[in-house]
Image (tube, rainbow, N blue to C red; front, side, top):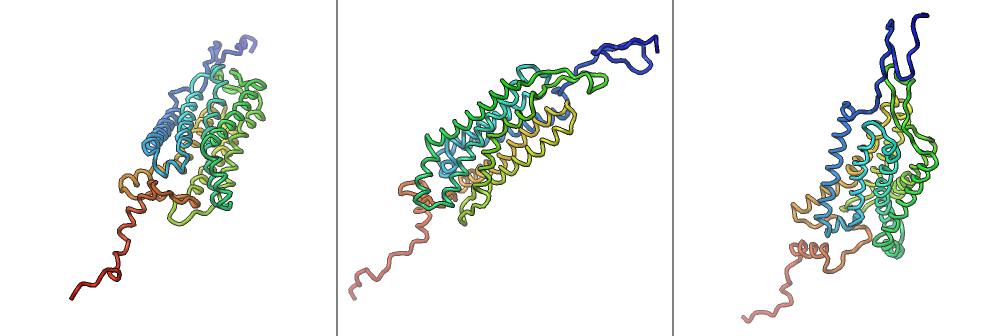
Length: 333
């Protein structure tokens, strides 16, 4: 129609209308049902992580917590809590700062947690697959200062990848006028999907090593099997992240932050459910029944004076045979 005039890029017009209306910005708002559901999931996951952390700190001297890494296990739970908090960067109107902070603040704590699980998997593999003489030497390297050094190196490697990602291909806030007919989509655009995938290399390698080191390990009867928990945790990690890639490519751009947020929270929840929460149940059951801990490694013999040895001596008194009368002097008739 020669009477009609085209609207500007930031405007739209209904059919058979002579007026132009401004486009409203569209992003993943805090009040959307999907975001509210994810926030509920984040609160549940963070609450479970803090509850497990409090239980581990309370029973920090128990054999179960010590065999789980002691301070390293608590550090891993703190990292899981930080991953839950980093998921809060995805909802809301994107800003240059939030776009830059999303990937580093979500991947660095996850690297810290996976590095502690890698040390657990390495210890399980050493105890079950290597000779006792070698296992004793390597076990000392997987605990104490050397273990913290491994965690530090893993976090530094991930930090280097994140720095390269932010410097070489920084994400930026863009306004897409073509996706929605009446609104403008405001979102964080990834500079390079290849660099985005390379940021996951450290966590993928740690998870793969954990899985390869534990999926065929057999535990002794009557002992808690750490290998099964690690194997299921890493399987859940791979399934979640591999399924999120095609999901990100198929959903609308406005829902991509929700997919990333859900993948992070489900990853944390799967690690808690398969690895940490079973230990919490054992700690609660052990403290309620005052029974000796079933947590004894396959190559670890309890030393004299330890809590495990005291429990064994205490519970073994009922099965000790009474002193024989053959050695006593005969009574005078």
